Length: 113
Image (tube, rainbow, N blue to C red; front, side):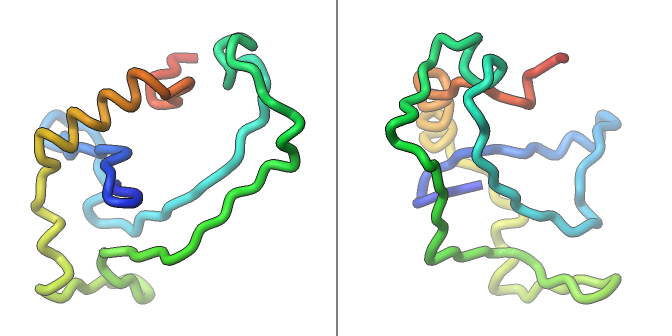
């Protein structure tokens, strides 16, 4: 997933190892704002500046490159599906890893609870 030209998330296909992958189902993109409870703030170490409340999120100029889903079938035209077999380039992965290491507070994918 890229946002503003920067790689923010990689979802790798490991079906050959028996790990599920949504290759034949529609995907959705969700967004949320999380509260400042201990689980989301490294036990309260990362402080929330409540003077900035209320907290909002705004999305504009969204461009989605994908396959159209209609009923039980989906279709992709050749011009929009080149990304389906594209791997992230090393420099993008390095930038994403640096940002995650230096700025990410909580990663639900690594939460074992």
